Length: 169
Length: 328
Image (cartoon, rainbow over all chains, first blue to last red; front, side, top):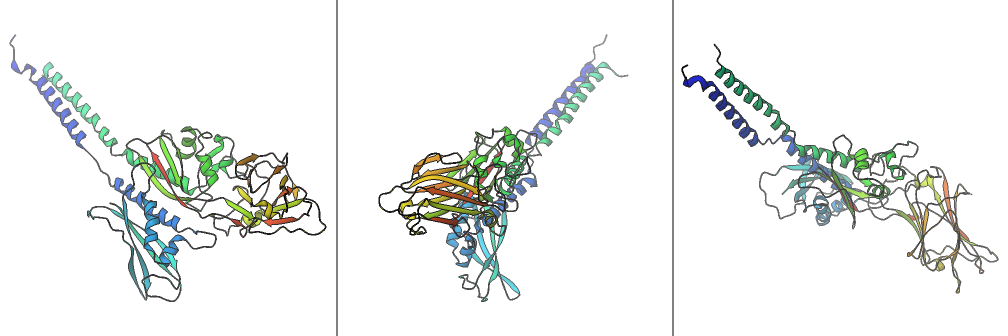
C-alpha cells in the first residue's frame, strides 16, 4: 500500500481551523466591554432623585403653620444657609467616603412677559472637566413682599423657581 | 469518494464550530449588567421605605409595626402615611431596625426586597446623632440608593411649675389633688394638620411631662407630693390600660400595670408616656382622660383639666436624615 502524504491533510486542516476559531472567539469575547446607555441613565436618575429629595425635605414646614427652611433662605436671600444645609444632604454617606456631588443653584422669576434668572448659589472649588453629565432639579418657592432677592419688587407675593444643577465632580 | 481523513477533519471542525457558537450567548449575559439590576432593586427598596406606609395582613388596623408576629407583615414601609413621602414614623423605624424581632435576611426579603433572587442588602438610617442599620457591610461592588428623609418627632405636653400656675387652693375644699389630661382624638386626628406634626393617639406615643411638681401643685411647707393612682378613661369610663411608662425624676423608669399599685413620692419631675398598642381601645371620635391622683393635701385640693391639643402640646422641629440602601 502506498503511503500518501495527503491522507492526514484534512484532519490537520480541521484541527488548525478549530484552534483558530476557538482562539479568535475567546479573545474577541473576552475583550468586549459593553457600556449600555442604561448605565448612565440610572446614575443620572439616582442623582436627580437625591437632589429632589433634599429640596423636598428642606421644603417641609419647620413648625405647625411656620415657613419652610427653603422659603426662609430664598426670602432672606441666604445662600450661605442654603449651602450649609443642602450640601451635607447631598454628600453624606453612611458607608464609603463623601459623595463628591457639585451643584449650582439659580432662581428664575417672571418680570413682565419675560422670565429672567439670577444666580443663587455657586459654590467655588470646582474645576470643570467638560464631560460630567449634569441633572436638573427644580422647586417652586413662594416669596412675599419685603424679600431680599436682588430682583425687582412687585409689591405682592410671587412664586419663583429654584433650579439646581447637580453633577458629580 | 469520502475518505476517513476527510470525515475526521470535518468532525473536528464542526465540533469546534459548535463550541464557538455555544460561546456566543455567554458574553451577551454580561450586557444585562448586574450593577443595573442591583441599582434598580436598591431604588425600588428605597421607594418602598420612604414613600409607603407598609401593610400588615390584618386590614382592621393598618399599622404593621404593632404586629406581634413578623409573618403578619406584608410590606414594611416607613412613611407615616400614604401621600406624605420623606416623613418617617419613629415607631416604624424602631421596629424596622429591631433585628431581635425581624430575622435578617428572611423577614426583610419576604416583605421588603421581594422576588425570588436572594439579594443581600444593607440599610442604614442616619438621623441626628442616631444611626440604625441592618445587614452586613457591603462588598466592593453593590447597587446603592440614597434618600433624604425626615423622622417625625414625638409630641409632648409640658406643665412646668415655674411657668404654669394652674392649681389654686380654694377654701374649704379637701380631698385629692387631681390633674386630668384630656386627649380629644377627634381634634388631634385632623387631616388639615401637616402629617409632620399631626398627633394620632392610636399610632403615636404621647408624652406628658410635669416639671417642678411641688410648685405646680402649689404644695406648701415640707409635704411630699405622693402620686397615688393613675386612671385612664375612655369617654369618661375608666378602663384597664397597661401600655404606659412612668419616669420619676428621669432616673427611675417604672412600668406599671393598669393601676398604680403603690403610691410613689414625686420629688421633682414626672414624665408619663402613653404608648400605642396593636388594637387601641380608642376610636377616632373618643376622648381619652388620664387622671393623676395625688394624696390628700391638707391645705386644700384642686382638680384641673388640661387639654392635649395643638395649642398646649409641643412637637420638636424635625431634622433631616439620610436613608441608604445597598444591594448586592
